[in-house]
Image (cartoon, one colour):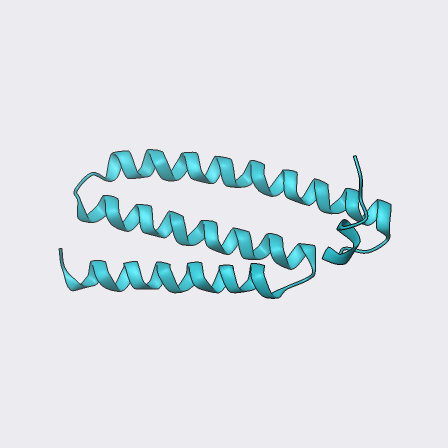
Length: 102
């Protein structure tokens, strides 16, 4: 493995930690969804880097396509939940979710 692999791995780790910080520190549901998306992009970068340096790009591309598909479905579900929270509470802050039942 070359030093470039470690650079890309550290870059994906920094991006993942940036997304994790966004999820932990924010109270706005839209910003939390964006943080989860940032974390997903870091995972995709890590898969691409690992596949390239193991000379197995076909498998890594298939995994990345699957992750992108799951990521798109996950965002659609999360945003639908945010819309429902907004309709019920007239706000998208996390404090409004505590009172929900059912």
